[in-house]
Length: 114
Length: 108
Image 1 (cartoon, each protein chain N blue to C red):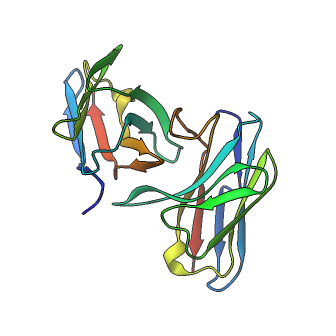
Image 2 (image 1 turned 180 degrees about the horizontal axis):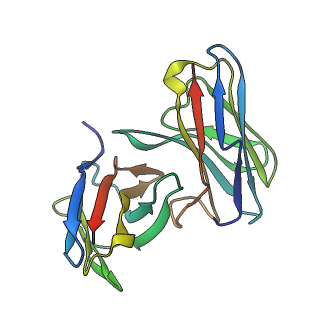
């Protein structure tokens, strides 16, 4: 699993509540990513980080925020969860940007918003 | 139109068959092409990685890229039940863009 731990692995939450997902890596890789995976859409990038406190938006960033206060941790927050955010969320890391090297993925967090 | 198109299947083949998985793309700027394998309830793992047009072989797997046709393929020879998974194509120009994934089942 390339030294990536996602927590929680499963979560059910109610509409309108805040939710934070955590990604922890032991590889000391500079780049970290949050993707969501939905049937028919594959993996879509939500946000990514290229260093401590350096983050940027991805393809589907609306309704999500991220923070990275330490190299090893990358947090994804849903400020007010909606049913459309029910998905499987994957964290990924790469040594450089994805431009040159492959990304390694965590096991995923299955989030259900009811 | 999606930037990366991939037939979601499902695809079911008998053990030992040759499997062909394909993706087409619309952005000619894509430079790096990858295939990921994803087992049920697991994260994707990199299977093949290539930069240029042509073929790249790794054991039973062959990745093929045709930039002129904007078409990539993954061939699996002598398929095994352990190859049953979802296969995602991915390509990079700046961000990594994924296909929707093809679910493959290899029956004993």
